[in-house]
Image (cartoon, rainbow, N blue to C red; front, top):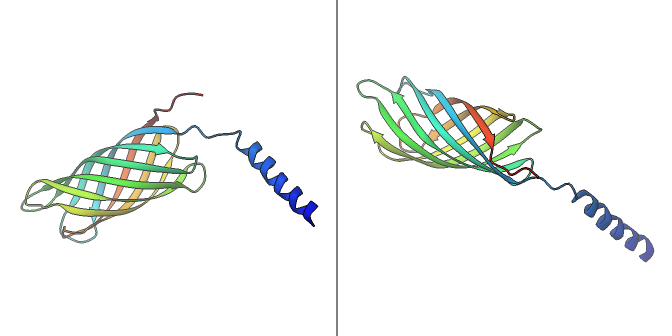
Amino acid sequence: MKKIFYTAVATLFIGSAAFSQTEYNKGFRLGFGLNGGFPTDGAYDGSVGIDARAQYDFTKKTSITLTSGYTHMFAEPEDVGFVPAKLGFKYFLGNQFYVMGEAGAAFGVNGNIDNSLIVAPVFGFANKFLDASVRYEHYSEYETDQIALRLAYGFSLKKKK
């Protein structure tokens, strides 16, 4: 019995050492995106925005993100705008499709709008240069939430091995 146990342990160590030879190239990616959204109620007519996203890849399937930009919401009698700052966790379901959760703050910069917390689940598609996603953004202090689409150009800042 001891012989079987030691053989199994040795096999696990040798097998894990063999797989660890293919280390993933960790590092940063940067992306610039255009956003468009519509409200889940009638408080606003729609939104447009731009953003920049820094992404750090821990593994081939997991990343953290930091996203900021500007979002403009159209409304009568006065449009409003805010600067979102969000931290996210991205998990790839395969090679290109992903789910992500983001949380952060929206800082009102024009119009009669205060600061708010943001929570956003995201589903998207990304390849070497393109990132397209749909998200539901909940604002704790605004009179609406929104469903938004993002189309972005991204590129790697990783050093080649």
